[in-house]
Length: 396
Image 1 (cartoon, rainbow, N blue to C red):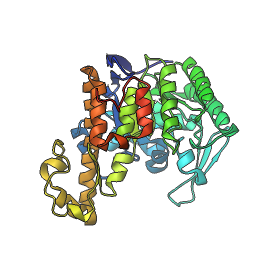
Image 2 (image 1 turned 60 degrees about the horizontal axis):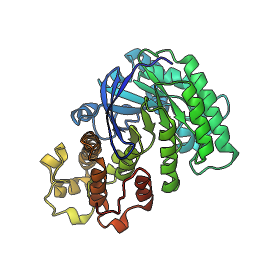
Image 3 (image 1 turned 120 degrees about the vertical axis):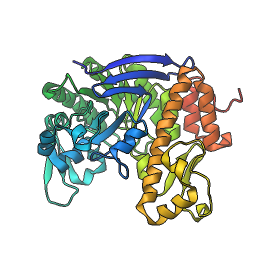
Image 4 (image 1 turned 135 degrees about the horizontal axis):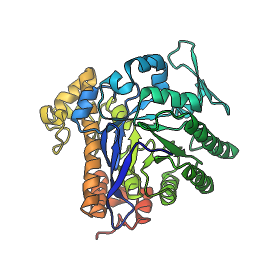
């Protein structure tokens, strides 16, 4: 199908499947691997789009389901889309609303036609989200990358429901393609489903690749499944999907997950984790998370992280942020800025390590900094990296 992006591989790791790419979208370039912060209703909670731009973010997410409820499609059409609505000049990706089938399952009814949601805003309204309506909403939002509506089941679901959801996602992709009106400015990505069943994943990849969409997402993971199963599904999909298209692993945001999945050949990620955890006072660092609400930081006059150049670290101490995080919203604001800066810097460092072909040693240092003793390394991560020739437990 028609594509409104260009995609070029800049560098490849000589050991793993990691790669650096340059994705050119209608609102500018995106360097990959990339982490995309989530701005559910047009902004990240706690910071402005302008602040996000100043952090160097090239692409962020909006949520189709939530924007479809408020402000609604009519208003988005009037103002000319979400870029104008939130004053964001860089790239946007919208999810299809499918994930809410899992997160709002008690409010949803799923049929072949689509998904009927009750509004979470307690106003009694309902929304029937069909593949056609999802694409119509995303056309109105105007995101540079839009996602097909897929039938999403929890990664812990087994049996016939997983197979049903996989085949329905293929049928729904065809319906999405048939009504997508803005192929010259919006890129429709297919989503690979199939749960934790390798055979269903293989079948789904085979079918989705026939549709030749501009990119592909790995969906239906990061839902509580065993991580040793998670990484095997990710690497299976990156092995099977075209190397000439960007690959997006949905819902991934922990440091170790980003590093491992990049080694397995993934190019794009999103997750609410960095901003959500900030609202609980947790700051992300290369040594792990710091709960700045803890009283132990009340007399700590260091920045959150010494090597970070975000405004929170350049201008304020842990002591100051501790006081604000326990009583004032400004604390959450500063930690959110820091956490997003941390994620974006991590991805820059990943890209640079791949370009300089020192990615394996970079990975080892990340894990050493994050976990200390190698006996504390997650077994799944050790196994995953070993599958692409990086032995975390080796001293070499």
